[in-house]
Amino acid sequence: MADALPGNKYDITIKELFANSEEELVGFFASMRAEVIRHLNIEFPRVEIKRSDLILECRTEFGPAAVHLEFQSTNDGDIPFRMLRYATELQQKYRLPVYQILIYFGEREMTMADGLEYSFGPQNHLDYRYRAVDLGSISREEIKKTNNYTLYALLPLADRPRRRQHPEAFLRECVLDIMQASVTTEEKRKTLLRAEIFAGLYFEEKIIEQIFREVETMLNIEESAGYQRIFKKGVEKGIQQGMEKGMEKGRQDTLRENVLRLLHKKFKKIPRPYVDKIKSLDEYALGLILDNIFEINTLSDLEEYL
Image (cartoon, rainbow, N blue to C red):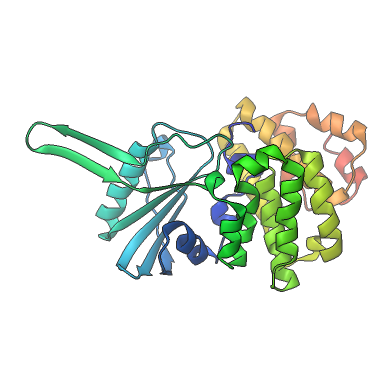
């Protein structure tokens, strides 16, 4: 897997995918009951371009708290310093105890520290800790035992050893678990859509297409409200991030991936000459396609941008 954040790959963050399901995330990763009261935020100077992933004011079994979930797809040696800064900013702004969870879902095993510690002289000490969870070390069965079907979307990110050894079989098992869940068809659609996006981090595109197309046909997943909302959100966020990143080559590659993926979703199949032309477009032209994606309803419409 390329070292890229999921937001950079699909322009959709875990925060957006799990909108209205935050209590399930907190309950699983923090191992405590929590009632979400509201979303919180902290702002750094614009020049620093720092953003935490998900911060919630919660009523927990231990009292009120600001719960901060930080999602990380690569091993970053500086993460303890960022987490500490988030903690102090939150404490200062909201005057609440801060409970922090680092959730890692990278391809490699997690090597990041879960805090900072030092002593200097008789009075200068720092002992700072947060909860660190390697999602790849959690078994598929452990997620299923929660009987919380919202969390089933995370199945493709779990069980790193099995996922590596038998990727196609493992992904099929994850999809089957979702299909057999005792929830409504609409909930299955929503969970499958989330799972497909997460699967894109590790599995080959042809495997994803083969496995998910089968169930999407059965459930008419593209007719669901969740699909339309996330599709539209992906477009909006892709445009926004494209503007922010300018001419950066990595961003251009990501824009190209987004354009192709969204067009494949819309047209099912794109003739090879069109794909080749899209791959040769610069960032400005790719941004135009994203900006007008809802007006591009035929291949003839698409030709205007190639």
